[in-house]
Length: 462
Figure (cartoon, rainbow, N blue to C red):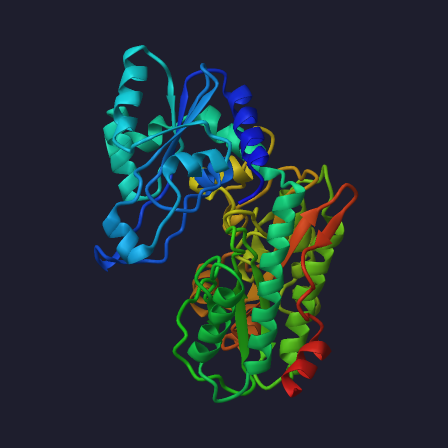
């Protein structure tokens, strides 16, 4: 945990933003894997961590805005718990450790909320994403689980997004710890990327590193030779010399702050000229984005400038044609770059997206673009100092998508399909860094994972 005064200040700041009512902040509970006593690795709700900092199951917090009072509800452990799991602090002591004066048993939360509702006090809550908390909120509020999403507090969502978007020095330090672990994971994967090695062996090894140095991976590892599938979680193939292996993987610190990096590695250490040509376009796109990131710029505008870098590079190779700016405006680049440039990152690898991505990535000024490819940009709004974002351009050759566009003559005035077909077995390349927006520009977080093709080759030769 951070110092208790950090949590006190966060809760006080939220109270000032909200005005009146009570705020329900359910923590998570243990989730059974295949029977009750065999649970998945516990992961606390990120909002609960942000406001209350307690990383144990079975708690719910209430911020009473009108009385300036916070309460944590939960049950003290029993002797049976002590026998199997050891002693733990009381709920009262846990609450005090994060600056909360009041605590009570879990069952008392129902009466507390009922009394507030009887008095007509507004009850604020965020969109629940776990079934258990949907049922809990249904019982507390009387709103059917299926209707909770439409009844969540937009004011609370916007207040939390405003607060969590800007990272303080302690959060940045935790993210950098996760980045240090991510560096170890990716360098290990690079060294292991040799012909005959099973993808699963590399994935398991780097996930072990995430557990050895922190709280595990920040999302399911993507590690594959079939990089044309953007979120490919299959690790069942043997690596083949001459192919490209994408590794998109990150770690969580022990306080659950995330890292998220991607590198693309030639199996055996040497890029073919064809691979190198595409790789260098993606590398230029990545470095262009970093150079453009600064407070006041919108990430949507940077995404589109990066799309122009990609389209220009592909035009130089004969894969695209025509006016680059017009091609991007028409969305022709999205045949090769069908996703967004990046997303926010913090306590969640896609930070706060349980609140609704539209609230995190966009606002009244910057709205999503309803066009294939750019529509997948998760974060487009104006950058501020101490935002943490990812920068992850890529180029992919997706046979089914190429076939669909060619058959339907989609953007055929900008694409040389006869040339593109020569890349049908290419796969994909993605390069991703984690970026802190500074007062004047951008800083890559952590030691930068080797990205120069020569550096990658040297690592694999060791």
